[in-house]
Every structure is written in C-alpha cells, then in structure tokens.
Length: 134
Image (cartoon, rainbow, N blue to C red; front, top):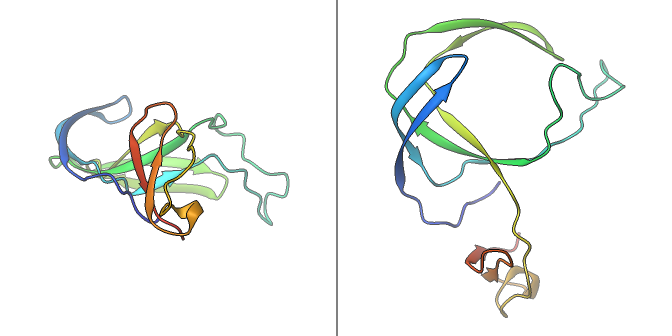
C-alpha cells in the first residue's frame, strides 16, 4: 500500500488476545500501514502451493500501528511452511482488522481513471474516498 488518504488520528483500544492476554489502553493510529489480501503462494520447496497449517483467509485486512504499555517478554515456538522457529513476543505493535472493498462509481474529472487526483464516491456508503493515480 502506498498511502492511506483518510485523516489520521489516535483512538484508545483494548486488545484481547487468547494467546497472550489483554492489552488495554493501547493507542491506535488510524492511518493504515498495510493492506493485506489473501494470496496463494508457491515456492521451489513447496510446488503444490499453500501450506495446510491454517484456514484459508477469505477477507482483506487493513493493519494499523498500535502503541501499548510494556508487557513481559514471552517466548513461543511456531512452525510454518518455512520452518520451525523460536519467537520472543513483546507488546502489541500492529492490529489487523478485516475489511471490505467499497465499489467505486464514476469519477470526477480529476480522479485517477480520468488521469489525476480526485474524489471517488463509494457506492455502499456514499462517503467520499480520495484516490491518486499511480
């Protein structure tokens, strides 16, 4: 993702993770850092494709930076298609939330499809979404 055009602000969020317990009073920065979408992957070590260790993702995700109070260092061992590894876990740094795409309708003269920066109108919400041509 290149840029999130929404106005950035901070929100206080409480995170409840069944693996590591609650992290309360975290500050979330509403300017998204990552857009993640389900992707099939293949490698020379796994020519058959996706690893069966988890369920296939169905939705896209937006990921936001969070700042939480310090937690004690924790260690876990994980195994994925790239091997087994020991991880040291600190406090939360990122929160990824499921998202849905809003279909875009016709653009104003300056919108990306028209060759410039402009405003697209989302069909389902009616709110304006800024977009830029790349």
